[in-house]
Length: 261
Length: 307
Ligand SMILES: Nc1ncnc2c1ncn2[C@@H]1O[C@H](COP(=O)(O)OP(=O)(O)O)[C@@H](O)[C@H]1O
Ligand SMILES: [Mg+2]
Image 1 (tube, rainbow over the protein chains, first blue to last red):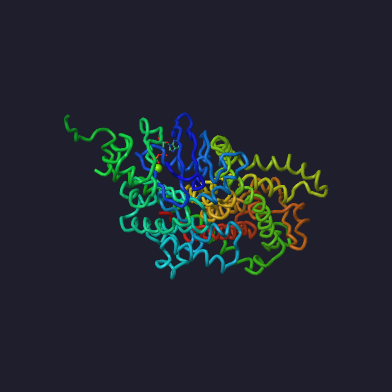
Image 2 (image 1 turned 120 degrees about the vertical axis):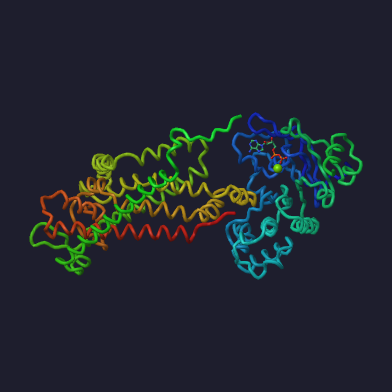
């Protein structure tokens, strides 16, 4: 794929994942380049969310699941027995499909992570909150109402608040699971814009069902397909423009042309 | 397909008839409640024609039957409050921790065993709990605290705590589990431990339900009669606030126990002692009413609205 080895932040190797009897992921191999945006596309139910949850080990919270294979983060297999999933998640953050701010005020939502990590200094917290909200392109809209309830914000604002909350703990990688799927076009645009602006500092892996979005924001794209709509395997992975303009695989071409309509 | 528009059988009973039936049921319970409160009020007023408010509410001696009589409610009130306090000290933390365990830590299997068990525990008649305390708990306690009396506050508190823990745990657990899963996932995805997420997000979000369960548990402790009488005795004693530990080992008489005693004695309907039963009952009613109102207030004030 022509990515220099030291540019790889995440290397997924022979990853299989099972929900009980159901194998949701079949032998996934993927290398994610540092400080880029990578899109994951594929039909619903093909295992995109499952794959993201493997990367921050959130799948382990679901009963009766099994993981095989390796995921190297900066050269370290995250499934090694001495890796603490709690610490891993500080490095690999996640933004969910539905905005899920805490039932606290705006300030406390963003300051939550740093506070829990032990930052007590009010001034320091204020700085973190301001920087994170600015990065999430929400600062101007909420700077005068930081003590309002988070649920008083609109859906798009709530999602940007969740992004700010994740940015506040300074992760390396941010996993985003269709973060704009519940938002209107304007809110979606704002989020795309802010994603483009933060890639200097973060690696972003974003699941999206929107081809245009994938082609607008991401440098790399992975297409996952599914056997019988349940067991996902990687079909094609490469530079976004290559994948969309001259896909190597027939499956990819069919999916893309169907999707672009 | 033929359209069948004809009414048959039960369909002849109209919606209105059903509505009226349920309305009548509702009216019966409302009228009964109002009736009880009225009787309480009237008899209490009659009592205060014979005994001054000052003697009742500021008196430190409760002796309604043997002359010279005295109607100071404080021995009963202090016994009830102290007993309730000790019960709460045991039952509320244990109940809450059980709820947290059940909803956040136990697997589905363990919960499916413990939850019904709790409900069964809540269904055991209180008299059984009373004798359980008298026959098992008090002798056990005597090994640790040789000075403990056969009837004592500690034993009563322990057994009533056991009685109300299922209520507290069950209602708290419902409240904790009602907190959307998405908050837990959000917290965990930030690299926060499960314990921290529970303490800092989940419990605050379910605070109103937890407090309601506490208050319901407390109301039950205050109103509990059978178990406290069997385990705690029936001797009106003022709790000395300066020696709380000693009071634990001594018998008491709660307000409910005092009412039963008067009711069962051969005192006639016209005596002051008989009327004092209603005054004590009315005081008890005010206490539980206050608790219920606090509970309602908490519900309205702290209820989080998710989406
Ligand atoms: N918690 C779960 N338990 C059991 N099966 C699940 C669970 N989550 C997802 N699945 C199954 O795994 C497959 C992949 O799901 P998912 O990763 O959500 O797909 P996608 O995000 O691509 O739509 C689907 O067949 C889905 O039904
Ligand atoms: Mg999904």
